Image (cartoon, rainbow, N blue to C red; front, side):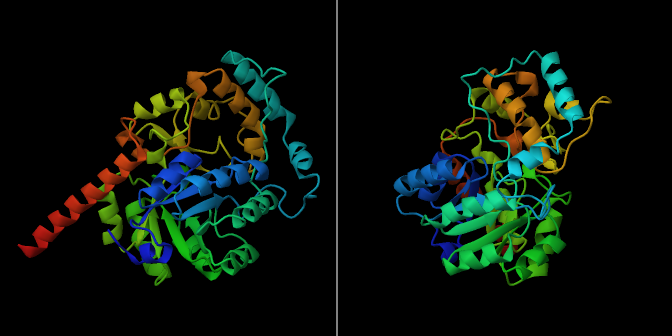
Length: 370
């Protein structure tokens, strides 16, 4: 399983693994793939701590960082960087706050205590915060800078290139992929609607070859619904240079997911996910739970645009997690969740991916040689 992307990054396997957990990132890179840390959930100070830890535990192997710099969001270009969080908070209607409080009361979710840390609702959902995370990332020996929502700004691409880094960006359509390449992105991640997190509405097996043809000779990583070696073989057969995976690492032994979330993932089928705006304001695939259903109720005021939706729900999600409210507990995850049926170490997942890929390609070779 060796493609030109392996030579570009000096890795053994063209398997890229997105995770918010540093242990998963380091384990994937040590196993021959390329772990990519999702920076969104961290303040600049905490991100620096996480990357320092990876530097010390990755055994000199390459790894990457993924930021979120959306092409559009509420208040873009109109906010004072020094007062951004307060300005955005003022844009959240009181109607939404009252309704969400009512829902939490319905489900018996207690408030946070005075001793609890309050969540940082803005995080990296806007360019200004994303740039802070980029600055921290560039101070570490990363090999890849990725953007999860469209092409990063041109000056960020140029800055990464000045540091001899490859730049990747996720897309859900041919048009988005072409814009990324025109912006200077080196690696296009074509993500089908089966994926967890933010997705478009085009299926992977349709999207991958469309993007490969549209941006050639730029390398394309296939994303969306990949959890087996057979699917990797299919992606490479369709012209992709590797795969971008995410959901399958949530239930690994190294993952920092709570036992409640892991249990829900292990017992979910491929039909137990839904694309919903209830997490960030943009369509994202996640477990279908009471959380996703309440936003479709007749009394729901509807979701807000990014980043207002996450700022609205961040404390509610902290309360739900603290008190382990099963009905409202959800998690961004792809349809591949139906294959995630037991907890395994990262290296075992990698081994199985490779072994099944080899079996699939050998089976195809036998068909060709008949």
